[in-house]
Amino acid sequence: MKERVYIFDTTLRDGEQSPGVNLNAQEKLDIARQLQKLGVDIIEAGFPIASQGDFEAVKNIAMNVKGVTIAGLARANFNDIDRAWEAVKYAERARIHTFIATSDIHLKHKLRMSREQVLEAAVAAVRHAKKYTEDVEFSAEDAFRSDLDFLCQVVEAAISAGATTVNIPDTVGYATPFEFGEFIKDIIEKVPNIDKAIISVHCHNDLGLAVANSLAAVVNGAQQVECTVNGIGERAGNASLEEVVMALYTRHPYFKKTTGINKPEIYRTSRMVANLTGMRVQHNKAIVGKNAFAHESGIHQDGVLKERTTYEIMSPETIGLNIKNIVLGKHSGRHAIKDRLLEMGYHLSDEELSKTFVRFKELADKKKEIKDEDLVAIVENEVLTVPETYSLGYFHILSGTQVIPTATVRLARGGEILEEAACGDGPVDAIYKAIDKIIGITSTLQFYSLQAVTGGKDALGEVTVKIKPNGGSRKTYLGRGVSTDVLEASAKAYLNAVNKVVFAQMEGEEHLDRPEVGV
Image (cartoon, rainbow, N blue to C red; front, side):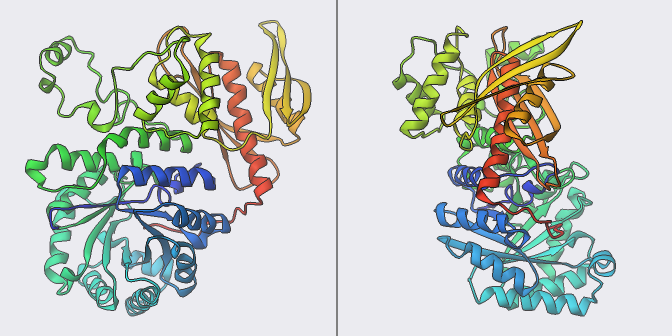
């Protein structure tokens, strides 16, 4: 299987370490299920020792997501490894991923350990993990800035101790492609038992070279690439899964490598991760960006109309992007909606389909044509979300250039009707203050974004907000709302975030400080 490149997805671990990203247990499970549909080989579900919430999320994924290896991260100490195993042991295929830094700069300033101590800790960690599972991965944090001879010594010892995968990270994104390719080649030549383990790479994007470095490593013998959907992650992020996969696919005559990725699921996975994390994909992002298959130049348009391959090296349909949307309208029936959603990969329960259909009909009364993007927005923003403790009844706004903006908001909680009014700096601020008064939870608005889902004057407006509850909470909560009325979308987004706060309180989730991780 030398031609096969394994895809190790760390969206739920390294990706979730992106500043401001906090996914709840259900959102993590939804992403993990989608990653399984995408066809990744390994899902790194989290860092179980980090908090009780992380532990429960990894355990939940291990118990419910089948047909894929579930990995838990652990530092090179027994407590971390024990906790990781407690979380991943329910998986059909479980992996423990343990790591320790090997660069002198990390040894001196972070670990304050000698090389001998690091070597001993690495071997002990792998042996301890091996007591639980045959599938053990060892990572040498900051490998690229490590002394090559010492790194090779640690890798050899880790394999001898039982590691079945050895990961060579460029933790700080310092490498360049030619250097990193040579680095992997040197390791393969210098480590005598390297053939007994899969060689993995984990590249960060600080210089914008994570994908290029990963591909250079593959050319020189790496068999596994660690990456994230949309390239999210610490600082400038990680190697982008979709870019690595499509580069190997599109340039197969050069790389002569394959992956097990179900490519038509790429676009949907990208959109799901963007929506749930609140990290929007830049328009010119390769593969999944809004402009990736757009042609504005007259010369380009003419060429594409005559023959697509003149300016397109891959088709949008390959990644599951249907740019010829089927247009639905107010006369479309429930069956048509269900069929269209199934084509797009959404398998909804009867209750979820009913809720979607009601919202579809409401939207169809306001819009002449409803496109795929509208349907996706309804499903992902209003159906596949946390339970609604509070729902929006109505709101009324008084605003103008010479008037203090005032909002009256009515919410429903079960059969109870709650109503309050508040003034604000603008109509949106007034709505949010009225909601705070009703629910009794005040929050700081850290992020607000409004964008059109589709074109036209009747386009759905999609609002994304990020709030942090006042009173010492460590966590931020993401909310999304859609409507043809931007004020209604704003109210729904804020209420969606607040419902997540209420849900987290009811679930008693703990939010502890995370241990430092830089793999």
